Image 1: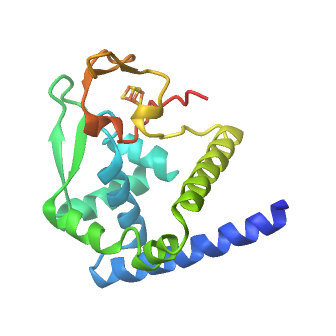
Image 2 (image 1 turned 135 degrees about the vertical axis):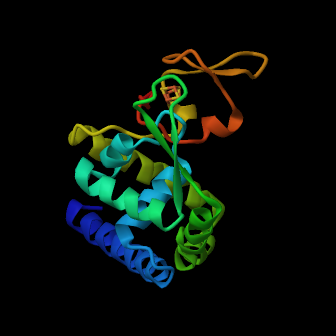
Length: 188
Ligand code: SF4
């Protein structure tokens, strides 16, 4: 496939998904950028649920993100806690109301149905190709990968199935392994 064709498909798919998410989000009183912040916070690990990381992931200024997070907090969709080691650092967590809004919107039902129509083998191949394409684009733009912890070069797993982060030396759970991280370094 040539780049023009690829661009057209990716753009149209992205537009369709964005339109559907925007529609369901607005029906719950949540703006598109607020929905993106909620989605990020639902997937990131404990090292990455800070306002700075949200700004990096969304490619927005700290001021814009601060405003977005403020609205989400005022509406009861996220809550803040202070870091136990460094009281200057704030962590953000989804509330049950935030999780509920997100669950109704992402991923959109139309996308789920379209993917389910494809054979499983094709779904796996497509996911790998899209992941690879994303990685290439992130590298070309000098962006952080924000990949899943289990695919990070620092992810260590011992024989007794204990997981540890090689960077922080902290123990990781199975759930941590599937979350995305701002310190992620791809193994390939
Ligand atoms: S192993 Fe990598 S992705 Fe996982 S917590 Fe450590 S730095 Fe983050």
